[in-house]
Image 1 (cartoon, rainbow, N blue to C red):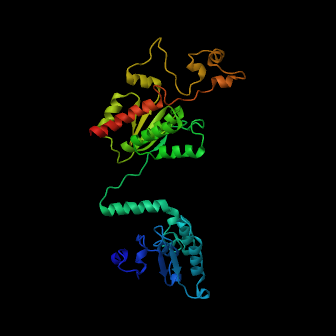
Image 2 (tube, helix red, strand yellow):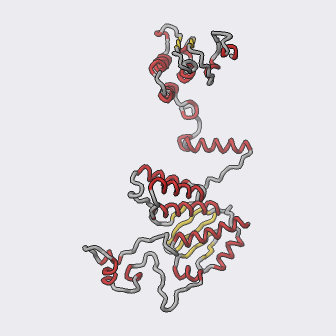
Image 3 (cartoon, rainbow, N blue to C red):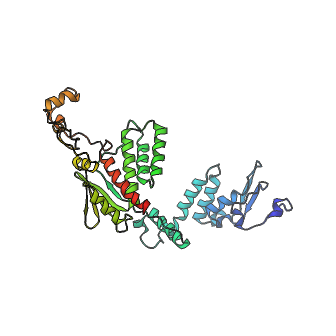
Length: 350
């Protein structure tokens, strides 16, 4: 081969080993004997060994009389003759898949139930098996189920294109670290401008899930005026730290077998901070309370006059529950984030 490259020989007679990426710029002619016996992808690779410089190249495919060829061989040769333009490799590969079939992995000869497992899951299992044989640590792919019953939809005004919004949802949901969430936020801000409140809520939701995975939560769900945290059996939280938290915080309740309940009652939150609303002190608004209650008992007429409602209002609109702002001071994200931070800190100090 080296002698051919250095022009010691002008003709190289070889097997199909030359299809494996050999780059010889001065080679401009190839003759393939009995081309009907080769696969389509193989012929494409062999043809690509010539014409790798500015010299015009020629590929001659020698075959027996065409009437003696099989129908499959005719299709292969017709395809290699037709797809000769630059960049036609993908079309060659697609046609080769159509002619030869999907093989043993995805074809009819595959045993088992790969259609039930799915090709992506099969590839993941295969990669995990390879890592295990190499002695590498396997990543824990379990994700906590997070259902806070809040609206985390991204405003259409912020990301007008639906496909881009879906991409943002998918990337936020698949984030496995706080750094990844922050990078995505910076990317959205660079592309679409200052982040809207809806995007910040989506990012906070993603952060909650990342920390829940770190701690080892099985699920984290909103249940009325509380958030219920269910721990996996192999959760990494120190039981002593957990008991101290429950003992020192009036808004936490530990339920068997491994469930932690966080009350979102404003009075419980104030008690934790040592600022229980007293006589003459305005109590913070509770999510879900009617507007008349949130306005300190004012009539709905007074509430209407001070709310800026446009003409055509109704009593139901005035007394309807105001949308919850999970990012408000003392709101859901602040309360839950504070608890998750305390639980995750026990991992760093443990």
